[in-house]
Length: 226
Image 1: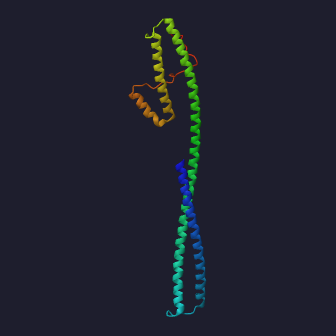
Image 2: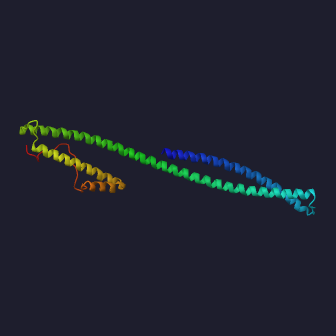
Image 3: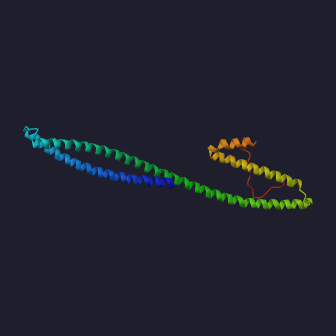
């Protein structure tokens, strides 16, 4: 966005300079047109006399000088008109580019607002999930303490249930990582092939539609024996 704004300011500056050049050229062209008008009037006056003029006379020399001035002024006039046309085309190009930059800026601003909104929602979701996770951990810890007391396990002893829970936690964490990578690939197709190749290289099977981690407030430990 900063680069686009700088480019737009530079284009505006160039446009102002071109506008000044065009105004200067227009003033010069008006002056030339006025001069040409005087020359045409004088030439017309000379042509009306139809009086033969000697090449050695002062009138002939003046006529030749005026004709030379007329040709030079006409050439300069045509050159100025061409330059003005080129400047106007350049001005139009700069104006079109400035409009494109404004459109790009508006699009970038909209995208930035969307990203900011999505980021805010994501942070809210993560905070909510963090709170739920803490409650789940506390509940699991309480149940595990009850289980250890019921089993009479010593501090150094690990029960079969604890091993099973640890295994399930590890599997769930791995599945969560794989699901996160899969969602990232779905959101950005450019990363899909890279992520898929890395997962295949690591011997990881991408999750199917039925593989998911269910969010819950309480942990159901009824599947385990105490």
